[in-house]
Length: 297
Image (cartoon, rainbow, N blue to C red):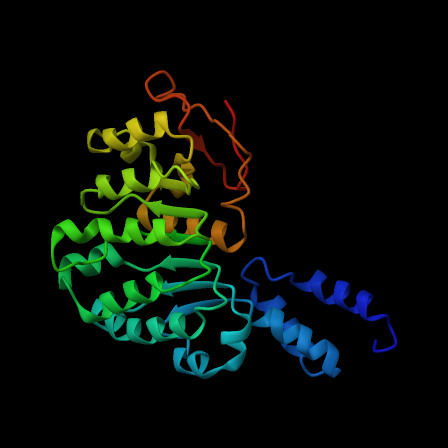
């Protein structure tokens, strides 16, 4: 293999994984095997192996990633997924996650959060662990995409009026392009002021996606969001496919779509008509089918 032209070797290795999505276990195993070959192939495989990772709490050894020089050099996409038995265990794990984000702050481009921030905030309030995570996200200089699979990133603050700060931080990130959120659980109100600030940004519009079931998106308390979406093309309301309408399967669908790079490959200006609400809520509605393509009606 070392006799092949370097350009061809690069194409072969990148055919295994190009670094734009979270690899499955077989692909990750293949990349790990390539690390044991020649120095040239090994360096390329290592860069791809560490370019995108999924951290599953509490199974993943976060401490080893925090100490890895490959993470700080190559990591561009990370998924943080929580599978803890109790929320107090999740809070303990957050400290390591915050350190990991700080460790990879210079290279990170995409952060996919599959963690129960709304629920944790409701039960535990303003905790140091959550503030550390918020600060770590605030301090990513090259972040382009933030995806929240479970909720709307309502981080706890000392004063409720400060909840708009996260929107201000997003506005201050010159590289941020996509913000994908689930509507909040348990009837918690969206921060409409912060959302409005993001949507109305004039210099460089951030594409904002709000995702949930048709019932939630058409509810009365979502009326301010629908009004914003009608008048601002960079805000889209996304209906979950019917088979993924509950909270658990919905968050899995969002995470898998994000990890596969499907959420930001929607056709430019795509509009999907919702049969039930087409006349009431026209252009902002976008229905996605399980393949990740748009269903135009």
